[in-house]
Length: 459
Image (cartoon, rainbow, N blue to C red; front, side, top):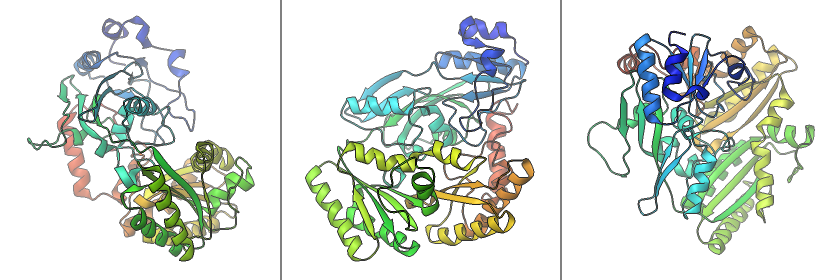
């Protein structure tokens, strides 16, 4: 590393500069468990310390990688021995909640679940929700523009951020902690940092938009007889439930059967012979009215033969049991190991043709290949898991080509919500034009001319 440990210790204190085994004992992502290889990890306590660290790094051209909850899946947190990791694990303070304005100001290292709980304590909610809620951090959610299971109602992380504070590559602090819904005073600079994966600046604080509570949650799992019925059901529930439709999460049979029947990790609430399974959730404030509306919508769907079976959760325990099948990523990974995972988006109407063609191509190349599909169908996002019995680089590239190349003709994206990192960088041109990539490179050059922030990621 270019920067000295003495310089770092002078800024954050000796106890908060980690080296040697204290670094290597940490992993850089939850799936592979690969150890961190950084030269050191520095743990600042606030924005001022982050700025001081970056000023010192800029002076000696020391590259840095920012760490949050390390729940990413695209190798965006990997660091080499000549790079310094800045971990925001000490920056977890919820600074202020404005109940009248419906905002929450928080340090970037705070876990998502803690923010959800803090909002709930004052009678509000922070609606972003994903399976890694207990580990992922707000800064990471912002850096990757996280999505999750309620995008269909509330949008991505981008829609939840009113303002933020970020430290630039040279240590300058851009503090735009706006708390207003309307602010058209020039460029909306926060949008440049949201989804930039730590390559343009280090987000240290944010003002988040809170929402009114939805204490009534109606949850059902249904089975659909065909893809046409599945898409018809999405349209039907959208019309029948209106603004109360909170989630429409689909599991292909290969996902549902693997986790229930094959691995036996969950008791199947519905028989496993159907091609598609959907978790539908309605969120409202009037429990009786919401329950009636939800039941009537499902009854109508059954009459129209959009669904062939359904189970409605009658308790929080039953609701959690339904969601556990959808969110059991650990079981999915273990059941398919070695597994390659993908996160793509494409037009809903093209999804079955795309997945059928992908499965045919995989099994033609590898007779024992397995494909598992689930996702946020309502917002066009599929999560794809592939097991072909190998994990070497040549196999990965071959599988990636099968998954990503068809997306270009469909107008899809190689990343719906996980970001680009290192893993998807060779495929960025599949869904971004050369002019778009050139503009991204211009922004990177303007914000970070020495290429110190998460170098090599995205671009």
